[in-house]
Image (tube, rainbow, N blue to C red; front, side, top):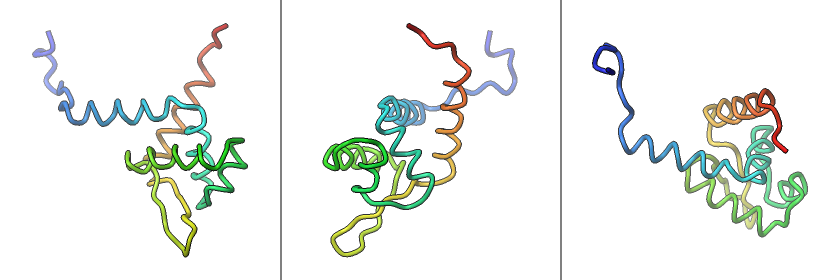
Length: 108
């Protein structure tokens, strides 16, 4: 059936796994809040912890996972690390996810 579609092309397995990993990381509400805060500008773990209502150690663990996935970047300044969202792709991904969530009826 799909052979009749001239431009049909499945993504390769590597792309599919990386996308699934990114979505899996974004399935945590605290990580969504962290990314949203980072889209507003560079900030520290302590500030992020206050913004998202979580302990700094928990925020650090979330940031480590987000960094490994390439969704955030860190910049060291002395003993502090300041984080930012990786790029505009993260902004678009998160904005679309939040927009979609706003349009989906809430389940009980």
